[in-house]
Length: 497
Image (cartoon, rainbow, N blue to C red; front, side):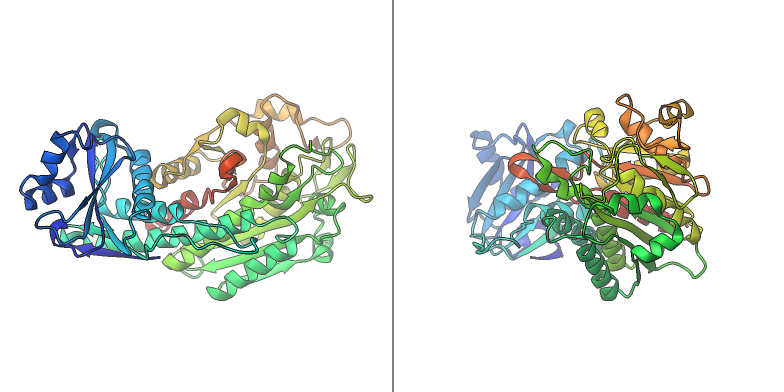
């Protein structure tokens, strides 16, 4: 699907369908007012008769509206004007695309509505509309033997702006929106692949292809190299699987030479059975999504490469399966991490922190200005925050505030949780430096506390995306989060550098 910007009055835009908003109750948006003036009150009269009241997601199609060049006018319900904020805006843009898909129009112009309750500039509105539109038409049918093409004829979407002086900012918003959408789609595609396809080797190949496409540096460490580096924690997780583990490194050099990079470390457990601490059978199929942190790193790198963002970023992905083989690590085993610290493994299903801790130590060699790890780490985070926001932990409050702000802007929010030293007591071990779990209380916090023991040499944040990386049930599939948050963070970082 092609996306573009069209400048001019709504009534003058030639298209198969033009979409304008209506707030509840029967209150016209700015673009709808312009159309109503052109039609000499035709739209307002329809609303007065009760044809539409503006309820969220509702639509009304008008054919052959007088003095309007578009073949169709779609009135899109936006809900109460006083409640129309970022979330409602995103939902409205998704609803618009889904509704256009049912009309038979081959092209359409959407006039992004303004919000008086939470004003946003044109760049933000176009970026968000683009990502929402792409998400609305996303399909994953790669693994199906026959694919039915969607009945929709829609091929082109333009975003209409009346103020031609805003065209440059709108174009920037479109560019960024498409880049973010492409990054999200890559992350979703990788997450949705089954574990027998998306193995650590496959993930390394996908990273290699991405690096080649955008001229990024690529390297992968094999088992022997990890053994030389002393990555005992990562390798302990891989012991039960016949699939070889990989440590994948992709470097994007968009910033000035010598600028310290931001490191993104993504958990890449391509399938997680729990190991010897075997998970229940119910919903274990969803453990193919346990590499969504890794997928989000690759999606973010794709997006910033398309934007040509002036920042240096290194993506580090520890990739492995967690299987209960005859050589698998057992509860009670003690391993030595790359940092030299020893860990008593009380539960082999707490494996994400084991592969991440060695990857975090490896990140030290890049002397990063900041490190963010992204992981589907704990069910406890799902219990605490549900499927709405990601959990955020950090050893630096300024970094945490930057991430929270980026999430608010991107509509991909996180929530700052505590990392107090008192929680570290739960990780005490009689036989090693510490254990890999701290019991049921505050499970997401103690997991973050474990990781914090490997981050003393840099500013660090941890995003627990166990509740936000995928959906279950009828809409089961990867969400691509937190690619929008990470890209916005790096955009802000590049702007402020």
